[in-house]
Length: 170
Image (tube, rainbow, N blue to C red; front, side, top):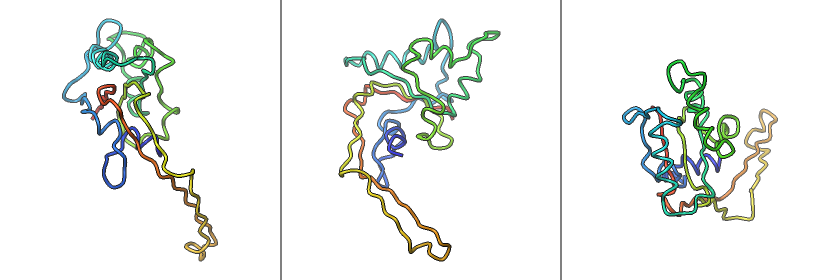
């Protein structure tokens, strides 16, 4: 849940302001990525914008939501090509691309986005000793169930918004 809020938090209703709400996401519906050469042109532009933000690029990485992964993995790079858009994105730095089951629990259903960033500038802070667990035997006593609730006080901070980019598909 905290990783979900770090990426998609709206900054309202008790949610921290996540990457998606901090930067202005590029909408693929209105600004489609064009594909040529070895990587998608638009993707390269966004990647380079992050890498050239005058910050050390050692923590560069890409996070792709499961819905976007399905789209990229199901779309050929070029007509007749034996590889997909996802293959081309992973070619550049496969050890820095996280998608699918690696982040499936952190993505809200229907979230269709790619996050590029220098992740050391994203800070997740906890404000308590740890997780507070409450065992409630009374609220569901009529069904002989014990309700377990876990809470953690946390927040997300983004030091340099220019170190991140979000691309979404509607």
